[in-house]
Amino acid sequence: MEPSRCATLELAGVSLRVDLSGALVWDEQRLLVVSDLHLEKGSSYASRGTLLPPFDTVATLRRLEAVIAHYDPRTVIALGDSFHDRDAHTRLTGDDRACIANLQVGRDWIWITGNHDPAPHGIGGEVADEITISAVTFRHEPTGAHGEIAGHLHPKARVATRARTLERRCFVSDGARAVMPAFGAYAGGLSVRDAAFAKLFPKRAFIAHVLGDTRLHSIAAARCY
Image (cartoon, rainbow, N blue to C red; front, side, top):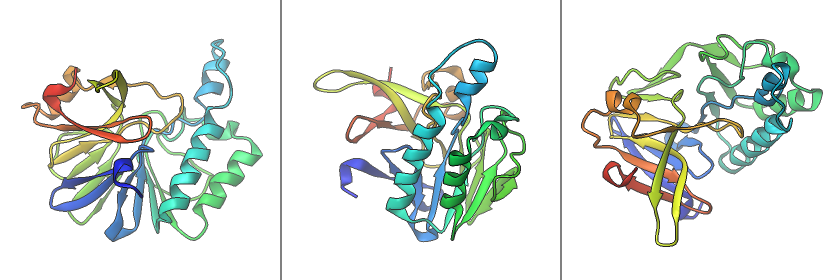
């Protein structure tokens, strides 16, 4: 993949790759990680009277298909809040279920539990609260621990480029820990200047890998606003 579409993230002595799609890739382990898919968020809102176009699950799965097809991982970790609520998997269409099943063929698939989906069942794969591989621990809610990769906070950053100002989803890392962007089509975002990030990165010595239109922008914390 061309360099502008990915960047290297060194974490706890491990070299990882952040992809423009919002996925994280560990080439040595043939591992691909996505976070906060929030599948069926549209139908969840509709059930409460807020109508959104019901296309979020299809859009998210199509993007997931594309990045899995590109990297052909041996293992996929979905880093929590894969479904927008505990019953969301029951609202999947037959086609969406078939898509997920096809993505799981020939690879290990691990659903990390999140606060929205404490234990997704009946859709293949394994369910775990967290998983540790070598020096890296994957969990949904960040604790600030060394070697941790988490999601949950949906980081976004506002940065100025030569042509305009962008506010986009981003990866955040200081080399000891990282927070991944939400992958879901309808997932919102929380500014990296929020107090929640200050607790994890008290010296604001992080890099934000911002997902632009056609390339990643790796920006020092001081340039994010």
